[in-house]
Image (cartoon, rainbow, N blue to C red; front, top):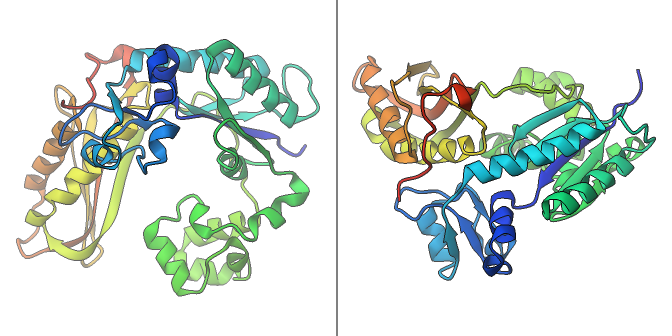
Length: 356
């Protein structure tokens, strides 16, 4: 089997860049794509806004505090989807193996490509040039032997950059890389690894598979493989999103009644993530883990899906009524999700974005 050649393409500040392209008055200014409002979150921020610390999924009120002179633009997902389709058509000229992750990024397997080009780097260069010419937008790309490395590479020279990780350089590239760059290593896992003195991928590589599996179970095997640059996951075209969720471990175990602030925060994150999807979710899920590590989920498929982050939070909060554990039960983890995704065209109605 030939060595895979994978490209990860990521549009640069996609929503904000579309707004700046279509309105010349916005160019060079800090643009924040979001509704204004106490419960709104940022969908995208231009690079001018990012210099002030504004980031996607950040509460809009915080973005306004960080950058008082930012220009707030309400999102227009009809336009963003149209541009996304343009970009997708460019990808498909080069390979049928395109796996979209959202409106603004995708994996491509160009091991065998339509143009017969011997170099994945050349394919990526042509794709980026076509995107610039046909959409007047820029994209960054990473080229590598697998998806794990290609995604890291696409972020290496952002914006408007190209970075290549060749098979023979994989281990040297990974050795100094912070472990927090590994998919699945969030704050909690990063803390566990730090307690073991593991701060870089090179440190992780010194631990045996047996030790990692004994400490972290099945994910320990995944860590072992990624530390060696091994990722056998293929590019799967047209794989639809089934669910989007966010969860967090609480700083201290809390009773059910005290979980509202965390549920609202997680609902904001999930809502922002769903705005990148072309499909629409139909089921709201609340996940809880007790102090004793018992996991329970409650779900609801409403007649009409929520039309804002606040409405999603209210549904998730209402699901607490279906938790029948003793009142004194304390919880160490909470999660909010949306599942049962279907094509937008078949949905009864397109949800609006955020409350103003």
